[in-house]
Length: 91
Image (cartoon, rainbow, N blue to C red):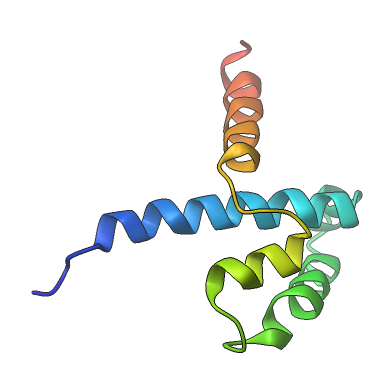
């Protein structure tokens, strides 16, 4: 079926998402308050300005690095997951 590389693609996407999440939350510190009110505008605007407007002009890794101002790495995703599960399970 041509599914070679399918699972690794999810893992890489999660790492990219962790990098973007960290950068967006730094740039939009009140993001959660906006989202709680049903206002995704500030997050959408950050994504539009820093990611979407570049489209396919750069390879994905470079695009993420340009958008976030940092090297791609697993640390932002791991930080997010640790904080999330710390809150959920009161660790």
